[in-house]
Length: 377
Image 1: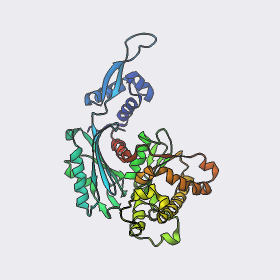
Image 2 (image 1 turned 135 degrees about the vertical axis):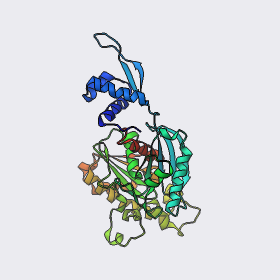
Image 3 (image 1 turned 90 degrees about the vertical axis):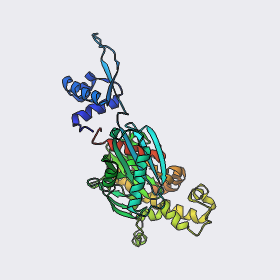
Image 4 (image 1 turned 45 degrees about the horizontal axis):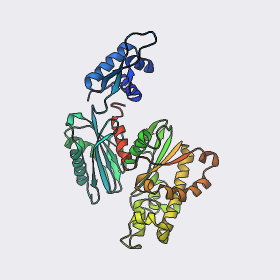
């Protein structure tokens, strides 16, 4: 992939934003001279990133109709991968997130680094239905902590893996393709901000409730990853110090109160084996033990969310994840009384709570967007 300057990226993104636009209008939008815009446009037309599509309207003074330019979303492709605690999704998409190929894999039973790396490579090879040179990036969502600078996966609680050099290994085994890693919840926030429930907002917080519990921020239109790419780890928030200080199973303190992992651990052996977590949620009133665990967990979750809300003051809070998306209405009914009690009215009344729109594709679409950042965006 040819390295692009900031000016070239700005020109490309104006075309992407407007859909159809003339060279003269690009010049007006970003304050560049027409000769510079023409030179940049010619480069992109040669690359195949832009195409001259049709002619626009003449000016009031008459003259030739301007040629309009359009972005070509399939001039490059992205392989997006969402590694989850129970399954992995691999997808081939164009640059606007349209999915051309998608395959699911089970991640249950992964015991070591090699098994994880092999599964990711299998996913990459399965969905790579275009020539390798047309792949812009392999972009991967990680269920754990990732350093933005060195791209090392420091910890994945679901697999109990530490210090995994995943980006380096995937780069080698894919024949040198560029690889970008980020926390899966961070990518989910990007996806919902780009094409989902938070589209058009300025500041948002995404709460992901599944096997684990995580969060991510978008501030002034940009995902906030913190100094080291680890912001938003709400699962480690303390909501009851006397109890939480004794925890040591690798998951966070809040996750011990609310997460798919903690629920399964709490009900194991106490409820008949044929009853799964989904059935418990769907009929929670019929299971007093689970109702107690869930109600208490939602109270702790509401306190953590209230603290986040008061510190951050977002426009929108989006709730997602396998549990969060599918049980949104129930969870909000259990959390709302505590949130309303804790958060001052003048703050609570200005925030909107939303169920995620993208569901299981949130991380995938966020990965597509993230994979382009710094290259085409």
